[in-house]
Image 1 (cartoon, rainbow, N blue to C red):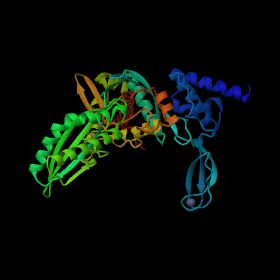
Image 2: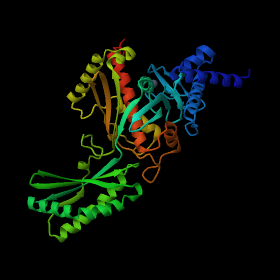
Image 3: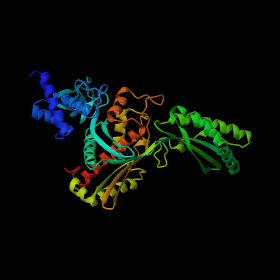
Image 4: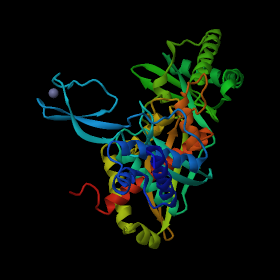
Length: 449
Ligand SMILES: [Zn+2]
């Protein structure tokens, strides 16, 4: 058999095993080495091809932009002076130790770029299994992560496997995402401030109509306007916070533009009415723009939960349910004792890994990474839930933020068509990662040496 023919045959055999569920995807490199005698580093390339083909067969979608590089593995190099091992991408040709500047020596040691590598040359994509969701969204998503290290994607894959076996994650996702922008005023007396509030309220219906016209492109609508009074050192401060709803967009730029319009209109009317103000500004401190507050209004709410009867929990997951519940409790209280407003454990890594994979707007998923966890018993069920109050996303490549072809390809392969589906997929993957980790820790299996 020619080499090419042999390679083709091995790939077909491995895909068969993957499809039958006999071979976990992260064990392909070892399988190629032990069963087919394909040595390092060639096994890394073939393993990536197998996983890509397997995903293509499962999803019916083809990879094009997320391509496997020619040498998809890392090589270890030694700096003799520092006695330090550098792990470099095989394509890297900068052979200097960045600590001492001397030349590093190649060792005959190889490793995968990341665990479960499936492609990408700057962003290393990992396959993290598939997750079934039901509830507000009924679908099965394929998980692609740009995680960095390797263990996260395997944890997510393992968690998904268990959740799918138990029927899938139950998701709740709000219909709209929100974006907020605030106007701030300073008055020298309560009298001026009260008169200003009355004036703004009486003009709001007309101002809102004009604001909505400025958000038509992304179908935004002003949903709430909140008034907040604060006194500080003789100043009478007023925050007027505008929130708009967006179905499939992020809407951040549009609400800013609309609120800029409201600011100008209100100033004209305040002057006409003779209401004196010291300052009228865009006050983004209060709208929560990237402020880690539970009152942050950006993004959309999503949650994912799993319900398991106590007996199935014990039999299938091999953990005493009470021990599991107690572990989640001690972890959650620990975060609160630290003064954290949110739990944000594994989610703090998984969510950025999804954003890096799909390259959607926003590129910094700070508020989107806020996460709470809950566990409770209901009837005879154990309920484990993660809640993401601020998933912020525009999944359309538009004036709102260009999404490169590789990112759009990731969305296509994941099976994400709407911002709501995106939020559901994110919540379910966070649930999978957290659930798997919580099980491992309550079994006493993690970090035990
Ligand atoms: Zn060195």
